[in-house]
Image (cartoon, rainbow, N blue to C red; front, side):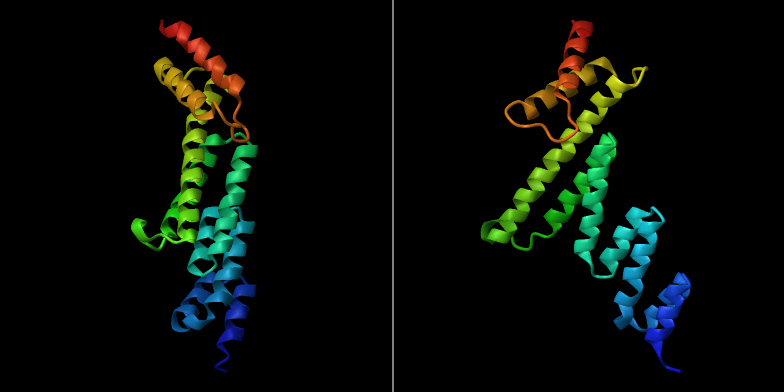
Length: 186
């Protein structure tokens, strides 16, 4: 009956995503009616990376960033430091892509985005390095070479020396690995 919006709503309610996207291809003005429920459906199905992409494609970058921030927080709280590092890296790249002017003519907003990029990238490096330390402390078998663990612990100690370590980072574990492998490598 030429009621495209109602037909799209019907497809979305029945989870007929292929049909909804096919109809969306012919009627791009209904993008929000498909991508927003599709992203929510993906998030409820624990397909968070795909949900984030659906939010981005639907024109909801703030919701995509919110999912990424939640995944980052969950990674830290669940001691999945490698995942947290990956998500911090993705957040930092989003901040970097949002900078719109060249370095010599940056606005205050762009400078804030550059500062956000720097902070998030720093956290990505710290959490990635700490994932090796955490693995060395929490698993019964050594999977990383002693010199790597020694140097990673040195790196982390220097990065967290004069400031509060990020959540989940244990200075005691860092110092323990540093001492353990310095004795082994001497």
